[in-house]
Length: 333
Length: 283
Image (cartoon, rainbow over all chains, first blue to last red; front, side, top):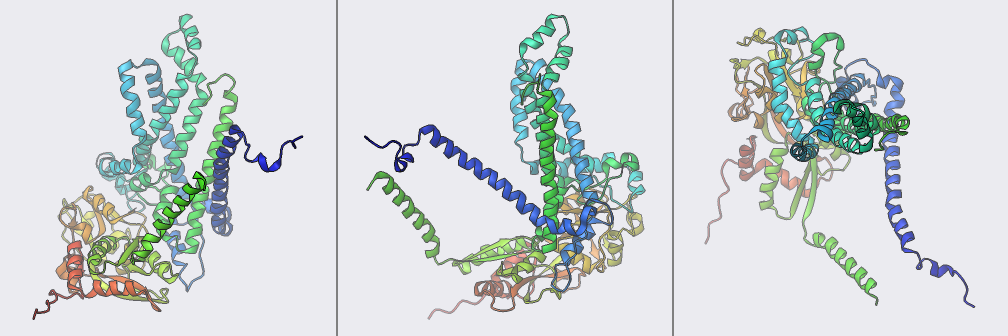
């Protein structure tokens, strides 16, 4: 009688399904480990900056550009390391750029997606969809060049008046490099992503639901708005979360058009607020990355990176939480 | 021998050949880092040096002049290029002048202004003067000043040479590269910015200002009459410098060919031979 299930034969005799499971599972575990290692590494490098500043890291006080220079030069052999950093103008700039671009592009993308899915003639739809896809794949540096060569000079010459320039001349220079330029171009960059996800969500709405409403004599616009868009809400949330993450991490374009000054645009300045320069977190990391060799500067740069990483994680969590109550009747995305 | 084992052996042999081939070619790779403003000069000089010494491969990481000096201190780079003179913090490093360069102050061509005093430039970039009329220009608008971010080597030089060590004002837009400053000034009638010699030449769309009556040109830079003349430096470890890097530095400093390359790239040769070496007569 042959012994059943010999252990030395078991590995050779793996079923194809089991082998595929292991083969595909290994890279997935690798990715999870990589993400974990990334988070641990970033936060470990960032800790000295947070530890020395406490919550005042996120507060205001002083000029962050001067603080960055002091941190960088303190790594010279003859001085004690300096860590004082108050990042509020940079955090505020990031919030403004991201929120402005997401609000602007949400409205635009929703109308475009509704038009493409429900109202556009076939030939327009066939043209529009590849164009939107192409726009989504344009590298951000090209948008940056467009901003520097077209939008920034336009804002500088035609939007900002000399009176407005003079009113803040001793504090900040209004030259066209501004929050407005950053928000407008960032909207252009993230809208295609939103349109693509919104369109997929709207297309997945069961036709029967819409036809039922139309059959009751309700017009197309109201039917689509009340049933189509409401049903596709989880897809709208998913698209918005994706686009917000993209906006949050956008670096090169914002470094090129927002003015590179760590200044917090002040809503109390009235309309000038929109044309004041700023500099978001990712652009600040890019501009200071040359100085990674200085130890206190490296910890400060990683602290900014940790804030970005934490924001992205929080964003995904918020998106997931927002989708939960909508899932019952909505279209999954 | 099974097919699988044969394939495995084949792959290993191919890998061994791929790894061994570059090592056998006798090419020594020398790593350098430093100023991003010096990169155009380095690229041109490294290409020229390849003809002189084909066995040395020079690789350059433009991570900033200050960062480059630290790389050499920590042994990460064999040499660094730097735009500022040595500081007390540069212990264990030896600095050698390579060639001359100038930092120009440029305005939009629509501005009739041709000359400024260093003190006036300082007032503009410290935010004490904000109107063009205060410095004798035809423009009736506030000044839009453009500069580099506070961690750029060019900024460090500008800060010490013009601002007297003070920090530039918040009303100076801080851009990432020299080229971006030139574009910003060329697109803004009220613009003023500090730009390297190479990025403010004809075709850049900006007008170089004279400083204290001295033009930002090779002739005034060579004689050090132009106030913002500066040297490009090579930074080597004071002890046991890399021989290949030292040979490269000597060639850049002294050879006729390197002088021509520097002049072509927009710099001003300072110590290079002015005539090509005479060829040995054939007997």
